[in-house]
Length: 116
Length: 110
Image (cartoon, rainbow over all chains, first blue to last red; front, top):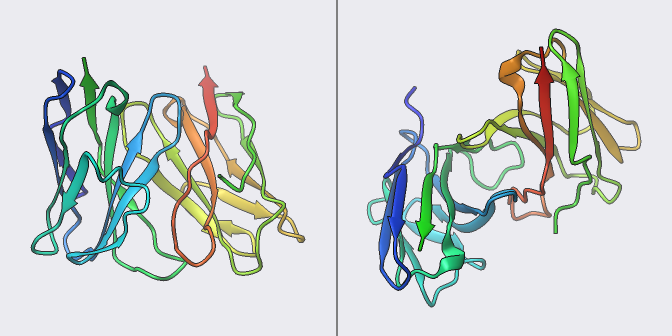
């Protein structure tokens, strides 16, 4: 079974530029998550999709961050404009069961963003 | 606002059992305890989860106290590849979120 794919793996941009990350979840997984992980901290949930609908985006800084999952499969996360404090690893995860405690999330390798 | 408390770091010897403690004194009756680990430069990896009973799989064992206020993850024969940050997580209410704390950095030494 192929895992969660993410690209690019690394990105360096200057502040005020825009950047986009792509995620392809495990085939058949209806639920997709984007997390932000700042160095030395645990991952923090940014947004959760169920198919192509948003379930939870309460932690997403909507003034600069946006995400979409148009066909209920792949997803993109965009930052526009980027700030220095956005430097982090952006992790995508997917799961097949939503709404139950037993659901297991599978994570991709992440995209490491450095904002200069 | 993680609901668990873990030691920041611990060392263990290769080939020995590694016992990772976690306190979750405010856990609710229907909340599961999950363990994930994150090897350097990788995404978190699911290890095991449980509700009340002890659980075992090919990676680890999970021992949950009878009052459910604490648990221990056991890696039976630690290898150098088990060096990672280990996260103990209690599902927050009914919104199914995984709220990660800082975890325990485990270093397995030869």
